[in-house]
Length: 134
Image (cartoon, rainbow, N blue to C red; front, side, top):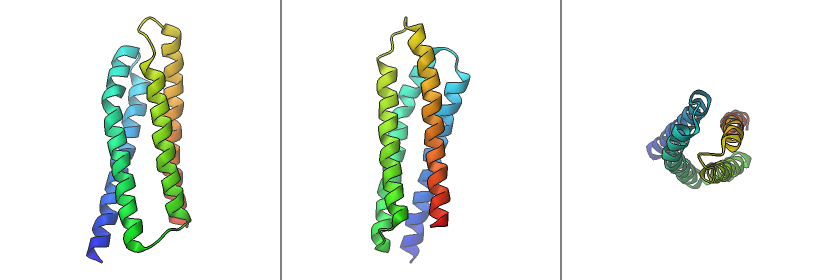
């Protein structure tokens, strides 16, 4: 059972890293007022975001497979991971087409990014709470 506890510990640790990246991105969107430095930082953080999400999904699959468990909580975690992947891709696609002269689109993007990161953090917290309940 030591293997199972190591896999669960790794899964939980990667969730903390994933959540830390989300909080860092949310902090960046709130504190950086100019779009170009913000876009550069978010462009750098996007691969780290997706890598940590992939590690969370992979370690979660290992834990679920090892435990021979396919419960409501596992399904919820799969849906949450895919949802987070999709909305982050949409955020990135919206950000990359904004030109440096489009001031209106830049300010709209900052509002949009704040909403996206708030939703992402809320999803992680909600999945955590529901995993403890069920």
